[in-house]
Image (cartoon, rainbow, N blue to C red):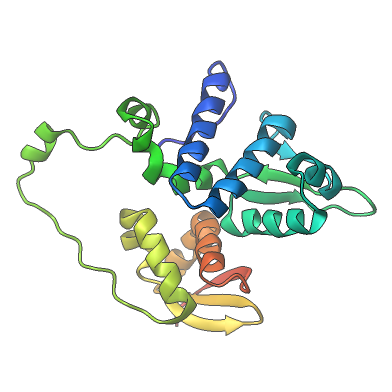
Length: 228
């Protein structure tokens, strides 16, 4: 899937595509998911700076926009951060509100299963078209991946999330990580080599954190170490 950024000559169209993905995802979910996504879309359309990737607004203002109390704002914003859709770019201090950002790659990854509800033209435009039947017929040797080995605990649940999101990426990098236990609210993962650990820390730590938080919201960090 290609990365989409709502900047440049086609910025307006890209913004509509991103919002359309969120809309389709919400409509395919339950009432709670629909309400949460609608509230985020309200923030995006009224207060989000696409060019700078910044959302800076206080809880009181959010509560007024959403027509809820600040306790509800705190709860829903925590859910959005835990899902990885919202990130904290600069933590608020001394009366200043935090500056937030959107992880568009994570949003598009999570909403992708609902893209086909919009239509095949949208799927193709987003770069996720399925293999054409003619190409499938030319496949000489069918390849069937083995099922993801069952595992217990937080890492077991996180593995299932990661495999469902992107099986090729899972097979290449996540499948080789072993559960090293929990250390002070941080899940420790053991990689088979120093290179493997470095690559995961440099390029994949965001996906790991999101999968782990979704498996156990009490865990906020992930540490990847090389095996002995």
